[in-house]
Image (cartoon, one colour):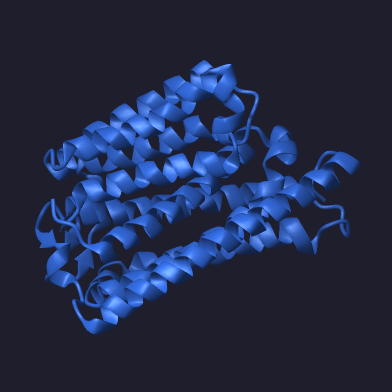
Length: 322
C-alpha cells in the first residue's frame, strides 16, 4: 500500500466530515423514533452539528479540488442529476431546521414536530445520496468513467452496494442511542451495531475484492468498541462524550477510507495517477494542514460553548430548547 501525505490529510478531513454528518443521521433517527426524548437530549446539538457539517463539507470539497483537479469534472458530469436533487433536498432540509429552530421560535403556535420530522427525513435522503456516491466510486457499478454517466438502476441491482448502504445505516441507527444517551437498552444497541457491521463488512469485502483486509477489520473493531465500552460503567460517560465519540467514528472512517486507497471503481482507477503533483499541490497541502487545524479547534470551541449555553438554558427553562 503506497503512502501520499496529501491523500493522507484528505482522508483525515473526510473522516472528520463523516463523523460529523453521521451524528446528524443519528439525530434524524432519534427525532423520528423518540421525538419527546429528543426535545431534551438531541435538539441542543442540532445547530452546532448542522453548521459544522456544512463547513467541513465545503472544506473537504475544496481540498479534493486542489488535490485532484481532474476528478471533479468527472464527478460533476457523472452525478449531475443527483447533485441537483441533492441541492434541492439540502435547501429544503435547511429551511425546515432554520424555521423550527429560529423563525417560529416563541412567535407562532405551530406544530414544530412536523418541521423537525421534515428535517429528519431530508437528512436521511441526503445521507443516502452521499453513501450512493461513495459506494459507487468504490464498486464502479452504475458508474461509467469514459462517458461520465451514472446509472442508479445498475448500481442498486448490485446487491453488495445495497448491503453496504443498508449496513452502514443500521450501524448508525445502533449507535444513535449512545451518542445522545437515549433510553435504549445498551445490549440492544450493541446487537444492532454488530448486525450492521456484519452486513456492511461482508458487502465491503465483495466490493473491494479483499483489498487491505486488516484495515477494514481494524475499522470494524474501532466501531464495535463504542457500544462495548458503553456497557462498562467505568467507561460509559467517556465513550458517550460527544467529542470522544466522534473521534472514534473518525478513526473508523479513516481506516475504511485508507483500506481502498489507492484504488477506486473496483480497481479501475488508481488515485495516484490523478494527483496534481505540482508545486501548487505542496503549497495547498501546507495551507490545508494549517487551515484544517484551525477549523478543527474553532469547531470544538464553538461546539462546547453552544452546548454549555444550551444546557444552562434548558436547566433554567422548560427542558426543551426554545
